[in-house]
Image (cartoon, rainbow over all chains, first blue to last red; front, side, top):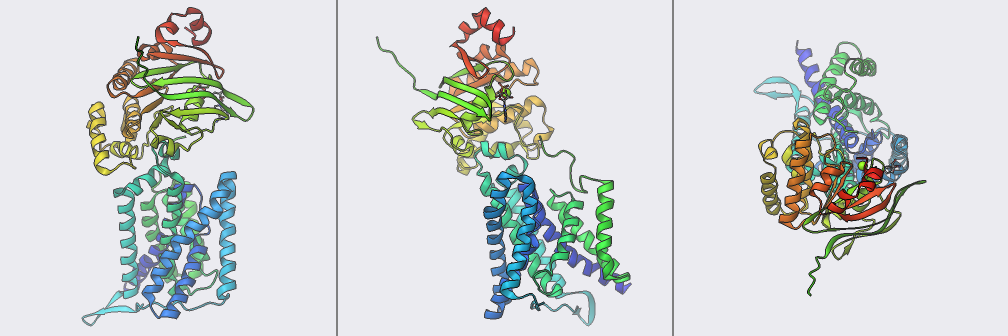
Length: 292
Length: 242
Ligand SMILES: Nc1ncnc2c1ncn2[C@@H]1O[C@H](COP(=O)(O)OP(=O)(O)O)[C@@H](O)[C@H]1O
Ligand SMILES: [Mg+2]
């Protein structure tokens, strides 16, 4: 039973990582209609930048802040310089372009920081938290992950639902023509969506890198899980991404705990297939939310 | 004799639109003056929507000019043209169903200050009591007539000098159409708004319009007062089908 509890809570933590990456995919899919496979490549680069800053300054926090800023900038750069020009001429090519960017970013990471696995420091102990002599089934690291993700989700919810920019972004995602006719600069809103996705992806990267270690391709497996989560959640639903992300994290953690970690990609695939059969529009998707 | 001329608020000169080999609008001249409704009537495929979409910046004209007051807006982006005072309500109840009624309205004036926007919102909700009642509902839950009112309300939120309406009557019950168009006519007169009303439904449009142009295969085949056009039997048979 103790095991179950720790698998469960460990699952919540990795689920939050999947949820954040899926959320990044959803933010972009909603505004651009593209699944951005480059997301994990962007997160990898921002983690290397964070690592460099941490090694130079000795400050984890400064590394985190740099990663978040770099995440936003990299998202903007990828959208403005690659996806926007490609998409204008060929919407189907956008998907391929995002793959190209992923491979290019991994190449850059390898060239600049080498292909070796590197330890990614983090100041939060990942050992069971002890309060009053009792060992709890979670660590400070688990707690920090949870709080950081919660803060980010609250921030995004506030941004989308309570601000002018958020309204403009939602309108641009649902109906770009009406948004433009209303005076919204839709191109900027799409770029902003990519920037926000970059921020979310960068946070996920910094949180997960201590566990996966950092190499140019160490986040690839996360892309598979995040993609599964985003699709199962409905691709357009931020709530779906978070809920299904945590659910998937728990399921995969239990699978790892009771069987073997090598089974997790198969289980993720099974989740994807079952969901596509039962509810093709996604657990949190709507049939025909888009007007033609 | 002193003739007082009102400055026409929207002037379209020699405007053409083409889609590849298809010439949808050919050398159209027209004016829409403030304080009245000007109708553009013509059969399906006559080029009415293309004309409005070119004025609003959704398609780039292949030739010609569009002026609003003193400003030229030809070939501008839609988001800039609406800021210059020209608001389009496109064909087919262009609301965003995922947003609430208030959000749809506020969207139309995001670049205004919050206080100005609040002020305009009160005016627009006064104009459309049905929307005021349902202001927190999602637009998806509105009836067809209410959604058309919402689309018009969103355009009015930008405080336009020129309002472009693309077939507001489409798919609505005749009584609702009359209500909406009479409201638009009153609004034009009371607030000195120039309205360019595109309609396939000529009878309804001519009832509220002061002047009208008849469009056929992208060309203007007649310009005149609504009475003149309604009285021209040959024209009605040839282009308006009644
Ligand atoms: N996006 C487009 N691409 C190609 N042809 C178009 C497009 N939109 C309209 N057309 C053509 O232009 C002509 C005028 O269409 P439209 O402006 O929609 O007329 P109306 O609004 O009067 O029905 C039609 O022949 C139509 O098929
Ligand atoms: Mg039309």
